[in-house]
Length: 356
Picture 1 (cartoon, one colour):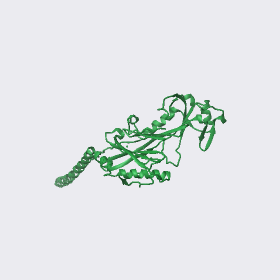
Picture 2 (tube, helix red, strand yellow):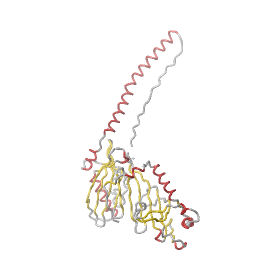
Picture 3 (tube, helix red, strand yellow):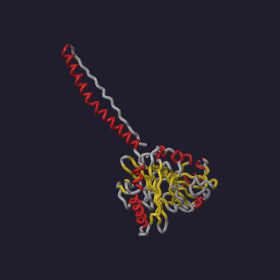
Picture 4 (cartoon, helix red, strand yellow):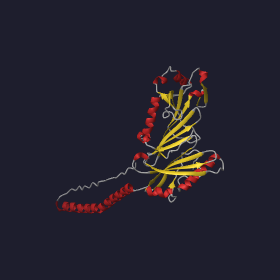
């Protein structure tokens, strides 16, 4: 699942006349140049004024633009929105195989494209029903301008899928900023400020989440993703090699290993992971580690040479960061993407319950 700045350029015309000489010839020359200069300056004055007026009119139009009529028309299939493949972050229900990049479609056409995308992914001709459509206004970037959030649910024989889409209207038209999907093992939440979280369950031993947002200008930014894994499973895949903890005489049963990534890749390629780890703390703290319902112990001793966990990771050639260093990398990514952490504190809109 980005503020417009109005820049008013003001220029000043610096005009100087340098003359030399004496007598009547010099005076006549000064008079002639001055008259020509005055005529030239007066001729340009209306042009400068007209340019300023045009800029002021554009600014007034931008400030007075009300997108609600555009959104209402779009919801009634009387308006179209331009889509892009970059905005499509769907997995099962994606329109990349069924619609054209850069083209404009009605809401119904987009929904049909997503519906067909499920069949393409599953390589089936199952009868898929569009069972529910919901919508609400949100304020991406918290700048006071409304964007449109639309949720479309698809009921298939084996599962139920839902796409959440963010649209932004300007005086230049309507565009789709973000489109992501959820299903029985993946949740997707969008809050009132355009902040997006997806969380997925990989089974008993791992879960993952991704965080992104749509800014005030309608641009989607990927922030970071994280895969959390129980070391209790007894083995670790690093690169193309499987490492069994018992072969190294080490008990990792109380450890969680985290694989962070800061660039979004396509579904066919692996991102570049950065690793950290932490001991498990108390249960009942689901907000720290999604699904595992457990907190983590933050202790810098865990990352010092001589610690059994650090020595194991060094032995297999796996570079690891402390949780403190990883938090600093996350904060740096926020700055790079222009993300204000307060945007993550907004209320979730069009919430969907997922039973994992």
